[in-house]
Length: 552
Image 1 (tube, rainbow, N blue to C red):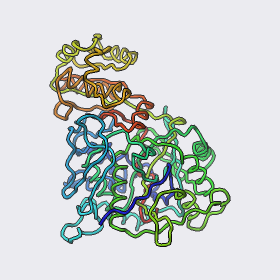
Image 2: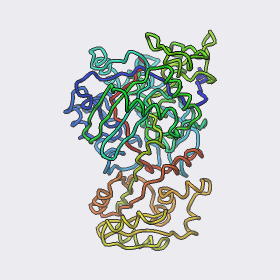
Image 3: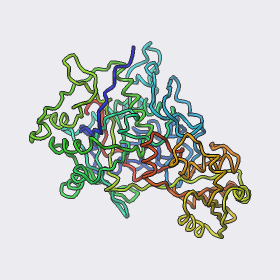
Image 4: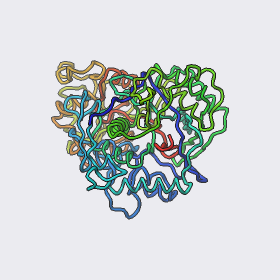
C-alpha cells in the first residue's frame, strides 16, 4: 500500500490547538528541561520536586528502581549515564560518523544532502516504518506477535491516568499560546502552536543539522504510542517585528497569564492563550510568507514527518476540517462553543496542496502538524553559545607543535588572557588550553586550508569555525578522526573543558559561537552545519502545555 499524498501548506502555518495543562498548585514543579538535557541525577531531582513531573512522560521508565533501557539523546546515544548533549558544562562523548542503530524492529532509510563529507545522514526522511511494532504502538504488530515496548506503553498509561484523574486538563477551546521566559539578562517571547509540516526542500522550515536514525526511532515510538506531542520544538524566524510580534508583546504586557512558573534556573515562565479568530488569522497572515529555522528539535521535527507519513499510510481515520470561509479572517468576531472558528481561521488550508475527502474537503489529521515554539529572532535575538571540544590522548604540547606547521600560534600564561585574545581574533581562530597554559591559533596557511576544505560546499560553510575544525584541524593538522573515542564535547563552559583536558592529559579546543546569520544563510542554502556547531537558547520548558492528538 502506497503512502497517500501528504498535505503541503504553501507557507508557514501555526494552527491553534486545545492545550493540555497540569492542574497543580505550583506548575514549575511538574516541568523539566527538554528530554535530551536531562541527566540521571536530574531525573531524581525532578521526581523529588513532584511525583507527577513531566519527566515520567518524556523519559518513560526513568524513575527510581527501573532497570529498563534509557531513551536515546538527540545524537543517537543514550544520555545516561553520560552527561546529556545540551547540558551546560556537559562532557558527553559525541556520536561517531556512523548513525546510531535504532531500536529493534525499526527500519529507516534516508534521502537528501548530508551536512559534510562523511557525515551522518540528513535531509528529508523517507522511511517505511509500518512493519515495526514501535510504530504501531497502540496495538500489537500486524501479525499480533509483538507488543509495543513496555517503556512507551508506560508513558501512554501514565498520560491516560493523569488525564482521567484531572492531573492534566485540556483547555476548552483551541488557542495559540504566548510564551514568555524572563530572568536576569533574559527575555524571550514567542508563540506555541501546531506548525504545519513541510519538506525541507520547500524552504519554509529549515533544518541546519543532520539527524540520526536512533533518536528518531525513539521519539517516534513515544509519540505514536502516547498519541501526543509532549514538548515543543524551537523555531526562529525573522518576523521584522510585524503584526504577530506586536500582538505577542501586547498580550504579554496587558493580559493576565494562564500560568506563571518560577524554575530552579532563575527563569520565570508565563503562558497566555489567544483564542480570537481575528487575532489568530492576523498572526497567520503575517507568518504565511516567512521562513523558520529549526533552532532546537531537529530529531523531533523529523519524527513529526515520519509519523505523518506512517499514520496516513495506515489510513487512520480523522475528522475533516472545513476550509475557512473567505470572510472568516476579517469578519468573524464571535467564537463557536467548541472553538471551531478559531481552528478553521488558522488551519492554513487556503491554497494548500492536500488530499481531499469524498466531499472534496481538505482532510487534515493531528499528525499533519507538530507542536512548536516560534520566536521572532529580530525582536528577541537568541542566545547562541559555543560548543567546545576536548581531544583526549593529544597532549597540549604536541597539539601546539603540530599546529605551528599550519597556523600562527600565540602563547598565553593563563586561560583568561587567552580567552580575551580569542574574542578579539578574526575567524577562523581557536584557543588550545590545558595544564601548560593556553595558545591561540590564528591566520591559517591559506594554501593548506583551501586544499582541505570541501569544494562542494559554499564559501560561507567553509568559513565556519566548526567546518575548519572538522575538515582541516582535526584530520589534516592532527591526523585524527572526529569520533567519540578521541573527541569529547563540552557545552558552553570553558573552565569545564580545561579541567577535562587536564584530567585526561589532552587538549581543550575553545571556539567562539557561530553567528545566527551564518547559520541561517547556510540552512537557507540547503546545507547543514557540522555536528555540535550550535546551542540555541533559551530553550522552551517542557510541561507547561502539552498536545494530545485526541484533543488537538
